[in-house]
Structures are given as structure tokens and as C-alpha cells.
Amino acid sequence: MTTTHDHPTRPSTLAPAEPPDPALVLRLQAARSYPSVSVLMSTRPGAAMHQTDRTRLRALTREVALRLAAEDGGAEEHRYLLHELEQIADAAVLEATGAALGIFVNASTAVRVVLPLPVADRVVVDPTFATRDLVRAMHRTPRHSVLVLSQRHAQLYEGVVGGLRPAPGHRFPLERDRGDARPRGRHPDRPRLHEAEATAFLRDVDAALGAHLAARPMPLVVVGPARLLALFTDVSRNLARLAGTVVGNLGGLPLDELATRIRPVVEAYLRSREAEALALLERRTGEGRTVSGMAAAWLAGRHERPEMLAVEEGLYVPARLSPDGDHLTPADDVDHPDVIDDLVDELIETVLHRGGWVALVSDGALRDHDGVALTVLDRF
Image 1 (tube, rainbow, N blue to C red):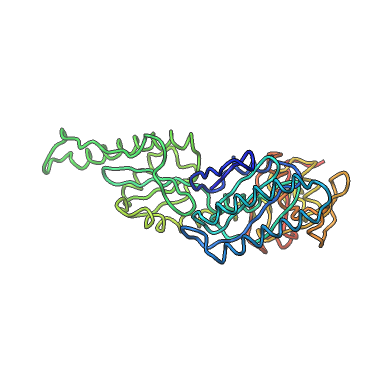
Image 2 (tube, helix red, strand yellow):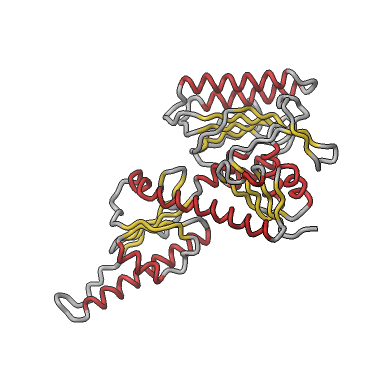
């Protein structure tokens, strides 16, 4: 869920709950000014925030106030930020919660995000927002399309934050014509005509699917009886991002049960993406096009052409930067204004803005690279 305020006296206007998406992440990454306050905490999912989570949220907002009060100057701006933060926190305790909450406030932006994955509770006060958990959520709970087929019906859903909802637009559902003119009884041509009708229907379905995916590209899961799945995979031209299939006549299932049935397919797809990222890293390492470790990745991300940044999910690097911004010194005094709370967030933003992509991988997967590695398109 996002809430945006242009002025501290403007009343909150809560939008429908949404997961973080690329447009939101890019907007937050572009909103650079000091101080930019990020508050992140795990929550218990429910219709409203649990009392223990309310207490933890208040403790985190007090931590923000203490950190800002310890800094010299900017008192008026700090009061404005704290007012915005309090408004958003007041709204958050009354709204439905997911696995985590993110609040992002600076001089130009005030946003609240409901996250589908737990996070490490923390406060970050930096020149930029801490968006790594949003990037992680997009990687771990990607939007995906689910096409459900039956003999005479096709419906398309979108998977969002572990649930399903009908896909937007007017192309679905599709119903197959009954074909009253076809032969009846035990006519010798009946099986062939029946399959031809099914194939024609599936071609129509595929055309509608292709139009939808052209406008909203995302991974695809196809659900249906085994024979229909076989026919569809034969005729479809839109399976380039097929995450997998689920066999069964499941069109009548409630959406929460259907989401449960397809979840293993989506999880397997995510595991395959991590495997592909690690395989790419191994190839680029053999070609001499990989830099390892935070210091080398930071420098290469700024001055070379980044291809893929691989980062272990649990890696956090508080650091100071040199005056030219190229060199880092690890730091323990995270609360100091000169210290960037987590340079990994900054590196992720740099790589994304310079046209690379990011793979967040399991802790330990990059042990030989000190937790972070960057592949580059060419070397100096």
C-alpha cells in the first residue's frame, strides 16, 4: 500500500494495497535528499496492526526522532519529517498488515508500503531510501499470470503477493462455442472434429493471452487437464516465460486454493532464476568479467558497464565513502551522519540505474565472492 502526502497538513489518502513494483522502486530511488528516513519492520498479517507491532513501530519512530535530534541544524525540516512519519504510522496501525511494513519519508516523498516478506527491523537515515527489501520482494514474489483451461472455458488471473485476482482487461474469460452443426452420435469424424474445435479454441485463447502479455509481460503458469495442456503447449506462441504447468481440472476452485496449488510452481521458478544467475556468474568469472567483494563491486558499478549484480540477501555493509565517492571504509558507528547505513542498497540502485539487473541469492551462495559479485559487459 502506498500513501503520498505533499504537505504535512494534507489528510491521508490510502490507496488499495499493492506490492512494491518497479515504478515505485524507481521513484523512491530517485527521491534523493538528506535526511531520507526509511523505517522497516516485520508485522503479523491481519486486518489491523497487532498491538505488539504497534509498540515496535512507535519505538522505531522514536529512534528516528532521537537520531534527527542528535544532528546539528535543519530543525524545521526535521520537524516536518517527523510530522509526516507520525501521520503515516498513525494510518498504518489501523490498516491491514502483511509480512512487513516500509515507511519512506524525506522532503519530497512520504510513502507507506506493505511488504509480502519479513524484513530485519531497522531505521535508516541516509541521503537515499533503503529500497533493498522492495527489490527483494519483487524478486521473491514476482507478479505472474495464471491461465486456467477447461474444455469450454479459459480464465486468466494475475498472481500478486501470494494471492490471485482476475487479470485486468476485457480479453478474458473466453467461452468456447458449442458448435451445434458438428456431427452427433457415433459419427466417424467426431473425434477429429472435436480435436479441431479444441485446437481452434486454444488458438483464440493464445491470441488473447499474447495480447495481454505484450502489455503486461510476466511469468506464466498454465493450469488444465493433461490433454488440454498438451494441445495448448503445441499451439501456443507465448510460452517464452512459462514458469510451469499444473495438471487438473481446477477451474472451479476458490482462488485461495488455486493459489496454493500453483505456489510450488512459482517457487521452483524462483529457484531456477537463482540457479541461472549463479551459472551466469560462473561463466563471467571464467571470462575475467567478474569483480568480487563490496569494495571492488562498488568501484566497478560506478565506472564500468554493469551486467548483473549478485548479492546475498543477508549482506549489509555500513560504510563511509571517500570524497570522490569511489572508495569505501567499513564503519561500526551506523548512527553517525557520515555513515551510509547500508552501501549494498546504494550499489543495487547504482546498478539498476546504469542498466544492469540484480539477483538476490541465498546466504552462503556467494561465499567465494565475499557475499557480493558484479559481472560487467566489458573490462578496461
